[in-house]
Image (cartoon, rainbow, N blue to C red; front, side):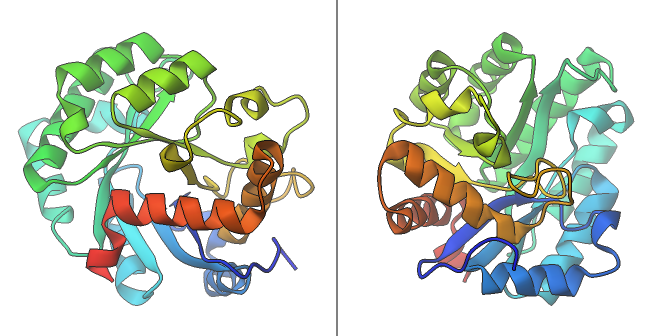
Length: 266
């Protein structure tokens, strides 16, 4: 069985459930998540088309919520006011809990950096208008993303730096800005630098995620990831923090519920 059965609820705050990797068995993937103790999954979009897909998943599954937005890889297709108007409409259904994932990626540079910045600014504005938190993708762009977060007053709505892989100093800067960090399967990898970081992050600033179908945790690394594996991440986080896994599950569940307004939307 994937993951491990848990007596406490868990939330996978970042899953690409619309990925073609799940086309053959998506319903079974969701059922396995439930069996592993995952009561809520936030399906994350990467462009306007996938925003439509995650909305459809949220509409058809009570346990699934949606985040809509344009990833920095796809920012080259952002058409200013036209794209913003479309995203604004996509973000209005009640099961949309965030704008994301958005941000900067200087590692792949699939979109010009100016386009990435423009898309980020516009999407933060939409998040502020609709009072939705943001889900931030950051890769090798620390100083620029932190500058943009401050300049756009993104702290007004808050959010999470997903797939966090920074230093203790980076974590402190993010938390001081009013944002959360989320951890995933990377935490289980040998010599993962995050192991030292998460021991000192405040309990009310951490979320769990899988980023599935990517970043599968040990011992399933090399296979497709899925939401059920968030229980493995919770277990490893508990081990590193020296607490019982049920405590991690309760704390991260409360953090996600509060940040994304899940209790209000239930």
